[in-house]
Length: 320
Image (spheres, rainbow, N blue to C red):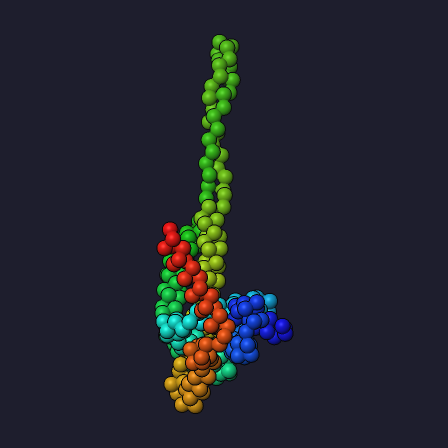
């Protein structure tokens, strides 16, 4: 058995032992299924890798893992058709709907990659619209902070002016300290009596309001610096907002840009329809091969084995 046949049995789920006893018709059917699935595997591996690289932002090895996950999902979906015993129309109809969904997803992702430059240009217009929509609200918030800080600075400035006027009038203040001591006094009769004596000391000191002024000046310096930052933010709010929007481009944002491109350009819309149709027909290759052709002897052997097993079970039930 050739490596290609072994590979075909691996991805389709066919039994090699049964296939070994089949005619060339079954081998041709296997090759058709294998070719169809290989096309889908390559297509969805590419789609998964590009999706992970562009929108998830993974490293190359992470993109390969995502591509393998996409491949596994596609293989398992196709096996639902290939391994169906007989012709299950319900599974076929479900696969057609699933093919439409997969074709839409695949064509959308691939289109966003193919039209990457056009999408980037359209994203500039979209971001400009977003900036024009969001910037006024952000400016209102910043202006409220500016007004609050300006009011606080003006109020503290007035307080400092009053304090400075008071300090100018009284740069120093006198502190009075009274000390009581006992002084021995000799009486007329020669006895000594201790009498209390009060001494008052007056010392000029710096007006304590000066420390309050210094503290207020530090607060004013901090608030003025903060006010300058808010004024700069207000002037650069559009540029900062645009930078935030450009920091991370989402899948839905680019999808919106792609829809706008197709709504403006009939060529882009026609290319999308062409790519969608191509992917849809690729997705339906296995379905058409399964339900369009006559059953090969591999299918007949599997059906025969199932019929024999059912008959033996019925006989066993009757005996019981």
